[in-house]
Image (cartoon, rainbow, N blue to C red; front, top):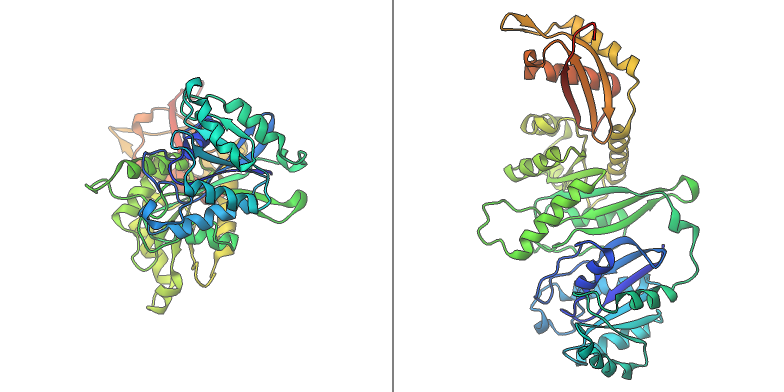
Amino acid sequence: MNVISLVGRPNTGKSALFNRLARKRVAIVFDQPGVTRDRVTREVELAGRRVMLVDTGGIAFDHAVTGDPLDNETRSQAALAVEDSAVCVIVVDARAGVTPLDDEVIQRVRASGVPCLIAANKCDTEADDWRAAEFERFGLDVWATSAEHGRGIEDLVAAAVGRLPPAEASETAAKPLRVAIVGRPNVGKSSYVNRLLNAPRVIVSEIAGTTRDAVEVPFTIGSGPEARHYMLVDTAGLKPHTKMSRTSVDNFSLFRAEQAIAEADVVVLVIDARMGPTMQDKRIAGKILDANRAAVVLCQKWDIAQAEGMTETKALPALRQMMPFIGFAPVVFCSNLSGYNIRRTIDAIDRAAASASERLPTGMLNRVLETATKKTLAPMVRGKRLKVYYGLQVATNPQTIRLFVNDPKLVTPAYLAFIERSIRARFGLEGAPLRIFLKARSRAG
């Protein structure tokens, strides 16, 4: 799929333009240089073409511009985005005029050989359009635009799409599996994405909070009709709600991470194998449960844990005991550094996705229910016993089963958990949450 990248110096409105083109608030917009660091991507339709739209961090060649210790990494990510692009839109601030940094960015992008044009942003009214003419000195087409108000956007899009190569069949490929990577700050989420891609696709640093946005990264295994397509979504580390120092950027990072969970087909919860599940890990697992998403748990840094004497035989039961509420999720012990079990994580993601969408034959489901309820009778409640007449699978993603019973008030949590275990024992459903609802109905009904 062709890539259109938005590049430029810090704080010119690239993220606002990205959100305008994506027709959704995807990238964080904040009046502060250096908010965007990684490449933020979104598959969108522009002027009838499916493209991958990329928002990049502001390119600063002087650390004093942003005061961000990760300027070099941000600049590297922007350079990689340019290399991958079919077209680059250089976003400048028309109100500020041409700055030395604009000059340097434009010259470097032109030197790449990628077709490019200039979006003179912040031309909010016709009275501002004259400001765009100053940028014509670079010999590129310049479009007066306002990301905030939508002025000039249609013409800009037409110009950018017009520079794309002919459409390819891949632009109509099957929808990729969305995989959200979540966890506390600094547990190895971004390193995991980079390890899968075998490339520095997202910024990795010891600085907690390096990832601020939900960064979408396309990922494919294989080729041709048998290829498996994924969209990896690297999210910001989720901090405890008690953090008093949380900023506006942190709040929006949290919102984007929670949104990524809600939109995912599978959520990968990354925890530190050396520490085991923390209270914050459990809170994040609770968000996955609340969203009813398929899930996989990755115990990262397993090479270090093994060196300290830990074994999977001991660690897995302990983890299950500490996080019983997400016991349906497969656990993979892995290491970004050594590559141990990294391929197995993809297999686990595939199984979880398949389980979440599996169709359960009604006859087979009811044989499981009949066998289970005859073998273990429901406990007496107020002198009456729950009777299960039959069940139906009423939805997938998440798996949802409706049981028709004599009286839903007679069920106990323990017996409902027993029914769930019986269904899972027969159908597996590894990685998929299972919702069971009871509805009153007479046997004759």
